[in-house]
Amino acid sequence: MPGDGLRVLQLYPKSDFFTGAAIQLSELSRGVQARGHDVIVATRPNPLWATKCERLGLRHYAVPMASEIDLRSVAHLVRLLRSEPVDIVHAHRSGQ
Image (cartoon, rainbow, N blue to C red):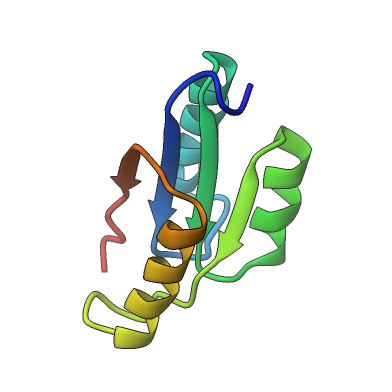
């Protein structure tokens, strides 16, 4: 339940949904949530991620994340972290 455990941000800098990395993130998030932690998933905009997260009871944020040095992405992430203080940020590598 939110508030009982850690607050974890799963940060995935892609929008794909059916790759191994995306499936791993989804399964990991479900497992972490099942252990009583509050999980937030942030990906590039994709309605499939929003729908999947909603079904799993996870909050989803669409963040542009154009590249590692994109200042617009940084601004979105800063706003996210200010509105949703987290204990752990788990950043997944994009492979690009």
